[in-house]
Length: 256
Image 1 (cartoon, rainbow, N blue to C red):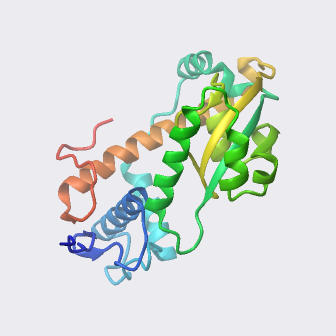
Image 2 (cartoon, rainbow, N blue to C red; image 1 turned 30 degrees about the vertical axis):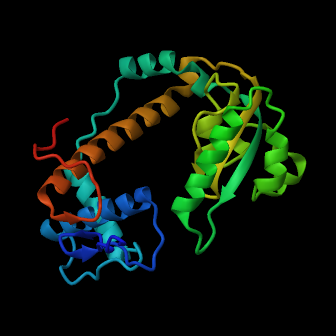
Image 3 (tube, one colour; image 1 turned 60 degrees about the vertical axis):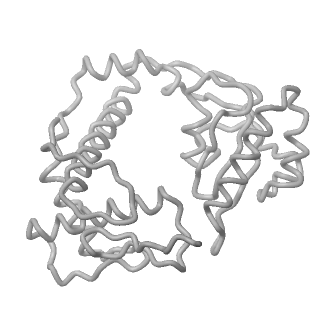
């Protein structure tokens, strides 16, 4: 007997309907957005007549209110120079200039109507298969027969890529690291799911700390924002009635 579909909801607001195909991460993202939207209403920053999201899309007013709410509730201490120097020393490769990696990939494209869960299963099976190929000789063949990218005709070859040559999501996974070979994880970008192999690396030049301090400080600000937001969402989830969506809830106050 098939398990009946449970409409995922946050305090009674429906997040997705049966005809929608959402992976777990997309559903969690909708739930987090709805938690924040409802929090803005409770805080008096948004009208309680603001319409519920349609297929995950919130109104412009809700988006503006959420930004105002986060400015109010999230504590984000400014990183000190010592903080920046420690972070820079621990992540030198991340701030290298001119770093490149020679890459090939197999793309499983996310297109309208695609079953995302089935697509991920296919991509994970491909990843496992290619990681088990000790010779590395099958990657090009699999790319030619499987990849949804035009590069598949060339065995998935993308050539030498720097940060400016590819999607930021891909750059974060292939640059500033030491890995060579098939990456042990799928890489998710706006285009879909990628099985990625790094064939070679060129490290680039290391600029002095003073030249990259602003970038280091911004990276630490982003980390602090992500940590504070995650904690705040845990508190909201702990106070909410959730159905059909799994969020890590916390009953304790937001602590920085």
